Image (cartoon, rainbow, N blue to C red; front, top):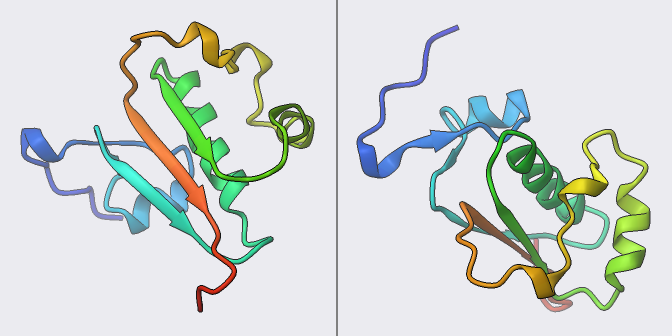
Length: 116
């Protein structure tokens, strides 16, 4: 397997924690990147976004998962508890976020009229 090309300082990447995805992305996600994940219901947007966030937090980073879903955060967390990447210690109530800087933001949305 070939090694990813060395990136200029402004284009450095970090691992997503998903080996196959990191290969496709030539080494992972961009540091300070913003990512919009779109897809139909059941495509895995929520799971992917949370898996990326939990992995990044587990490696010492900070992340925010933002969603326009109507489901409550407690229901989302109850669903995520089934996955091996879920770590309850990584979940921070929004009131405690304050002015903390985050490393990346993942925003997931599905619009009924979008064609995929």
